[in-house]
Every structure is written in C-alpha cells, then in structure tokens.
Amino acid sequence: MPPLNGLLPPQFLTQLLYDKLFEISRNIQADRRIEILGNLDFEIKGNIDKKKRRIAKMKGNKILIKLDAVSLPEDVLSYIIAHEITHIAYKRHTQRFWKVVGLIYPDYSKVQIQLARTARS
Image (tube, rainbow, N blue to C red):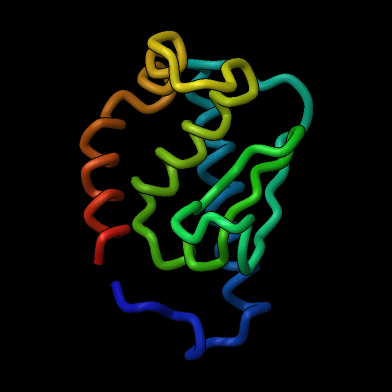
C-alpha cells in the first residue's frame, strides 16, 4: 500500500489508525485467549524514539505507535498489538514471550516475515 502521509491530514490519519487499533484490541479481548488487566490505550506519534525502524513500543499501559503504521495491513497491526501486549508480562523476547504472542495471534511468524519485507522496502 502506498504511504498515505502527505496526502491526507495527519488528524484524519491519526483517528483512522486509533480506530483500527481499538477495534483490533477489542477483538483480541473478545477472543478471550488472554486477559488484559486495566485499560489499554494507544498513542499515535510521528516518531517513538531514535530507532527509525521501530513501529511500536509499550510504555506503561499505553502502546506508542508510529503514524506510518496507518498504511499497514490489519493482520500486521494485529501482530504488533499482540507483540506489545505480551511485553506487559515479559520484557524480553524469551520462549515464554513468543508462546504468549502465539496464543494471542497464532499466525504471528507469517506476519513477521511480511513485516520484515515491509521494513526493508
């Protein structure tokens, strides 16, 4: 999908991404594969930190996500949310971490490949 930034107002893109993320998180919670305690929130940012390739980061009960993610397919966004939610319980990418990611989003390895290709292009 071509980048949308510059073609549409940032406020519109921010709201579009926010709505997508909330719908995905509601679906994850509705699946009842994992229980999320407290309120999960999202903050859309132009940049998260100095790591240019970083798309998202967990900070407290909030997932910081780059505005550029608005152009990502829904399956990739679902994986990103599952990945960041798992960071609530596990800070490092251990075997347990990946088991929980797989519990939330079983096809995560396929999406990781897709995300890696997107990052390279």
